[in-house]
Amino acid sequence: MAILKTVESKFFQTEIPYKPMGKYVHFLTIRITESYPLFQTDAELNKARVRAGVKDKTTISRLSMFKRKQSTPERLVGRELLRNYGLMTAEECEYNVNFAMDNPDCIIYGFAIGDSGSEKSKVVVDTAFSITAFDESHETFTLNAPYENGTMASKGENGSKPGEVTSRINQQDHIRPQVFFPSIVTLKDPTEASFLYVFNNILRTRHYGAQTTRTGRVRNELIGVVFADGEITSNLRWTQAIYDQMKSNNTLNAPDPLDEDDVITAAKKAIEALMADEFIVHTDLIGDAFVSLINEVKTLIGSEKGIQAILQKADAEAKAYAKAHITKKKTAAKAGKE
Image (cartoon, rainbow, N blue to C red; front, top):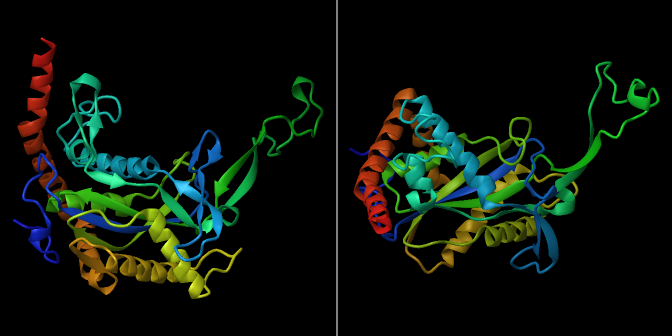
């Protein structure tokens, strides 16, 4: 029985297929920083030197949000919900340690356990880029540790002079609030339940990057979904098209942060123009066409009964898939060793 009333069933698989069947759904997401997150490798913020726009050929540096910085927090949110509603335990499935191989997280997002087996992720996420340039999008903070007297300076212990700032000091680049990262999250061969599972994870995830318990607050604004028989444009090209759109609208007001309404408006126009140039079969739910779907999904995941129904259906599909395909792979691998 279908859960959704606002989307035709033809866009979904009736069960998780073992081989790619050419159905895709693309979640059009704008990731908006709301604190000072860190997307970094080797103590430096990730960045790339790229063209500013599709039309604007100026070269700029942009902040980069690598794919694992996006997908890992989202799948961890899903795993948390599965444990909360009794569909998975920490003992039977521990992330990157001991995958159970038969729950929605393992089957939808994939896993690899050496010789024991692996499953390719059905969720495709690529590096996202900031709309604004690196210099406008980050700040350097000086960090040091306070003492019990409430100061940042020493009280004279260990040979230091009273009032002297000690060597326990550091500088760290942080991404500013209100920096925007357009990101397309793709789910291959979605069933209705896997579509809602991934949709829910994107909406619920609020922290990305390093030190997620203290900073890294990010809000995901979905502006639409695209059902297609192939992949669509890249994050970089969408970002560049948004930049061009905002430049033509005179809404790039550096060094002031971008206005969210301006970004959303430009993002919709940019993706609609890019989709018009695609040569695949696609159905776009963007802007007004997306309103009824997002409202229905939010109503579903906002009730205990609704989220349980989604998780239980996703779990049943994952276990059926694992029984039919994962067990066979494990048995074949074992036979090969013998």
